[in-house]
Image 1 (cartoon, rainbow, N blue to C red):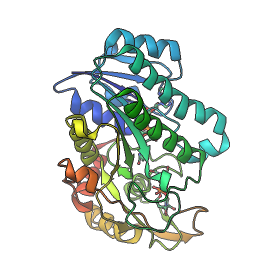
Image 2 (image 1 turned 90 degrees about the horizontal axis):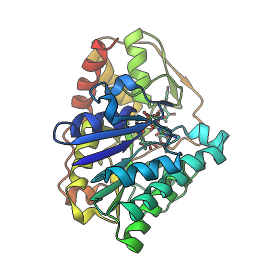
Image 3 (image 1 turned 30 degrees about the vertical axis):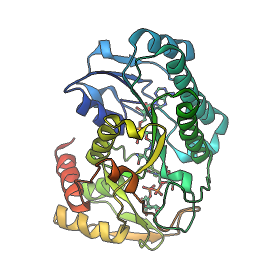
Length: 311
Ligand code: NAD
Ligand code: UD2
């Protein structure tokens, strides 16, 4: 199959590309704003398109010419803070480009078998209800969350109105190799890993008792593959997570065991708007055959072993 991954040079996209390249022709469209060409050095230059997903005429022409079987749309402003600082810009990238891509496929790509949109647990906001269910009250608390909600709803609507085979996945806290730890708002496990690696102190924002549903990148890849193979997922939205939650303090203990050492730590004020607990209901994906293969120990062990050998 011919697959297009927008944002394919980033953390999640590079793992999807590495998996699908085995049996498929994979194209990546990425402007390298946060991604790296080196993340996907197994993709040759003919299949790597360095371009902004906002370039509407280019993207439309690409869809027309290549007639992709699968489009996985990941390219986005991924930083919540950046969407708060510059909501007009992020809305163009996160909503307009999604709509343009859906429309280009509707008009020009009769071969399309699946369009996947990367949504986020952010759409749930700070609701107390656990586990988070697809129908749970939605309460976006940032432009990012609104933009992800708009994207997934457009994807769903394009199925309903035009029968486009779309699926949206609400990613929870994904972790694994190539997640960039460089920003204070990077995924907490990538930050904790960097601190352990460099023997630097880790800061818990709050008491460390907050929990998250951390999903290992290979389980995300498994879920995407299942959704692609399953027509029953057309027009649907799913939580992509493990259905379990663990606190930061517990995770810190796992790091100590796997690294066989400890580092110092401190507690600081909780981040404003931080949610205390997060855990997903994953019945929807389970009904399609998804079963997480990694628990937190096996996921962290694989991640840390990779990270130790990484420069
Ligand atoms: P990432 O920053 O590693 O990847 C995003 C990629 O998109 C980068 O390679 C970047 O260069 C590219 N990109 C950004 N703007 C672009 C543009 N205008 N044109 C072309 N390419 C552009 O982030 P990630 O963690 O791999 O996230 C992938 C997707 O998953 C995003 O849509 C993100 O919102 C979503 N998501 C991620 C998580 C997580 O835990 N990592 C959680 C929820 C949702
Ligand atoms: C995730 C998303 C965010 C948004 C949000 C919506 C990531 C990386 N972030 O934020 O984009 O969608 O969900 O709910 O996927 N922490 C520390 N020390 C650190 C860094 C973080 O204690 O050095 C805490 C942080 O305050 C939070 C927890 O760790 O309580 C997880 O933080 P995160 O940024 O990895 O993810 P989250 O769930 O806050």
